[in-house]
Image (cartoon, rainbow, N blue to C red; front, side):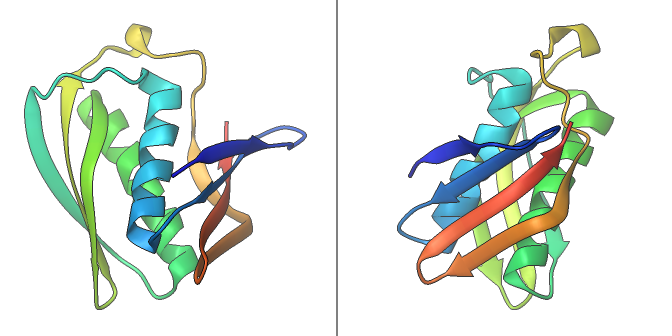
Length: 132
């Protein structure tokens, strides 16, 4: 399930697609986190989080922002293993390792935004703008 960068004047814009909406969310989440922390994350700690949503668009934005918040506040590089969607709640499960602010990559993502958000289930496609 690929993720590609789209042109944007000041921020990062990503397009992800795949066989399922959950799989597309998983790929997009790990791509965003990989931009910040790199791809290799040790499974030092395991955790999960629940995010409530009203639409597919809010599901994508709230999930990505929850991952950003958790990684920043807990000083963890995170890798998502699984995403489950059920009746307005998205649950992600993952693992992480402690990182200092100096161990990050060159991109600092502040938030996923609603700017030109696209989220569809048929076909599974998400386009999102990340505020950097």
